[in-house]
Each structure stands twice: as structure tokens, then as C-alpha cells.
Amino acid sequence: MRRIITFNGPIEDEIKEFMKFRKALGFAMRNTAYIYAEFDRFLKKNHPKMRIITRSMVVDYLATTTHLHSTSRGYRVTLLRGFCRYLYQKNPKHYVPEPRLLVWGKRKLTPHVYTDGEIEKILREIKKLKRRGPTVPEVYSTAISVIAATGLRAGEIERLNLEDADLKNGVLTIQRSKFYKSRLVPISESTRKALKRYLALRTKGFPTSNPKSAFFIGFSGKRITANAMSRILRKITRKLNFKTKLGTWPRLHDLRHTFATRTMEDIYKDGSDPSASLPILATYMGHVNLDHTQTYLHPSIDLLEKAGEKFKTYSNSYRQGES
Image (cartoon, rainbow, N blue to C red; front, side):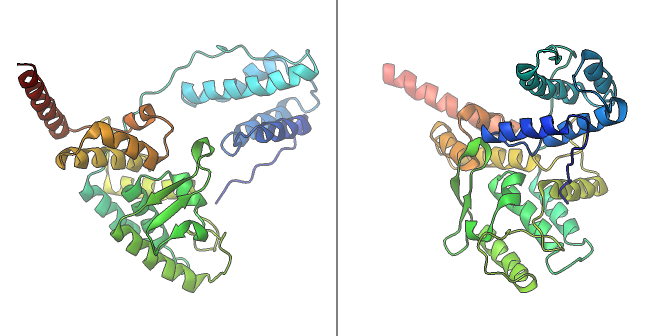
């Protein structure tokens, strides 16, 4: 269920005005609104009559976030800087946090590349979930299997509408996703059949003629969320005791890393040219440049050996051409 965000603190009007301004510039505020709401609640509780943001207010608020990772705390400083700079233009008495008010850095994450066996076990466990309505647990097993098979973002699955799924021709239309770009995503025959099976259940349980209705819906008939899919997967991976190489729990987003890595492995195994295939993979995954795609590639020892063999073959042929 999507969290309902409300603002009722001493500067709620200013926060709402700022968020409206940011949205008008094309920024998606869905994932940042909760932080502004958190700051709003802090001000309401500790400074209910304030009109000007001071340094002590920001510092005291950040002191309530010491349980978070430094990256999350630093992100809050960045967001508050943007808000306070907006207020400063109207009234220079507002304090604008220094960029390095907190010392923070990015956490090094090592994505988990799922094996086929792990994905099969996860889907089997999801299918055992308690049935609530006509499409659970099928909706989650289908949605997560589609992510594994296509590398789609969880948010793209969440926003998929009935009109976006052309199951006759096996093509999904991803509307204005990250970087506000749309794209067509061809799907395999097995994925097409899985989506048709789910759609039959969805249509029977929640019939509708509205093409803009959500494709994936939960027991209440409402659109499933990326957070709900993450919770389901987190519950299952803990039950199965799946761990990453660093001993942490795998994430839903790791399925996207898995797709990219397995696809590149298949390209090497088929003898195709990886340099020619990488731009195609980048377009398929909705990346604006190859650097983004390369961060999703986590080659195995076997793949590195194959890459080495390809380079050796190329090097030998190059030398022979020179002689």
C-alpha cells in the first residue's frame, strides 16, 4: 500500500509550494516527499511557531537520523539545501545548510546475481502465499518473474497499464520511465504466455474496459507497488536464507543486475560480438548511455575466461594480418 504523505507543520504551505515548483520543472517528487514530510513533522513537534529556518533546527533534525546510514543522512542534507535555497530567495534570513554539513559517502553495494535455481525456488515459495482475492499470489510470482526475464525496473512493472501490454505480438510499452523516456520491450514466448495466464485471472476477478487500468493488481483491485514486491521478495529470501557474497540479503533490484549479466553471458556463449550487442542491451534496459549498463554487468570466472579466449583469438588474427 502506498504511504499517504501529509503536511501540517508551521511551514506546510512553503513545502507544498516548493514541491509544486519542483514538479513543474519535471522532477518526480514521489521518492523525496516523505523526507520533506519527516522534516515537517519535526518542526511541528519541536518548533511549532517558527517562521524562519535556522541552523540549529536543521542540525537538531539531523540528530534524529543518526540511526540511518551516512548516505541517507547526506541525502537529507542535499534535499534540505534545495528547499532552504528556495526559501532564501524569498527571505535571506532563512539558513541554507552547508554542502558538507555532514561527512558522508556512498555505501559500496555488491548486487547479487541470482542463479536459475534460486529464482525457481523464490517463485515456488511465492505461489505458496496465502490467497487473498483472485490474483494473489499469481500477481507477485508473475510480476517478479517478468522482472527476472526482462530486466524491467520494479517501478516500470508498477506503472504498467492494460494498454501497454500487447500480448498478441509480445511487446510491452514502457511509458515515460526513468529519464522520461518511453521504449518498446519485446518479450519471449514463455513470458508472453505467463502474462496471458495472469491476465485471464485478472480479467475474471476484476473485469474492466478501461485500457489505462493497472495491469498488475493486488487483492483489493489496486495497482501493486514496487515496495510491495520488495517486501514479498525480502520475506521469501529470508525464509530460504539466500545471502549475497558479503552476507547481506539480496534485493529485488538485483534481478535487473542478474538479467543484464546473464544476457551478456549468453552473448559470449553464442559467439556474438559483445561490443555490438551492448548498445542493444542498453536500449532494451532503458539506459541513456553504456556506462549505466556496464554497472549492471558482473561477470563470472567462466565469462572472464571466455572473454580472454575471444581477445586471444582476436590478437592472434591481428598479428597474422600484420605479417
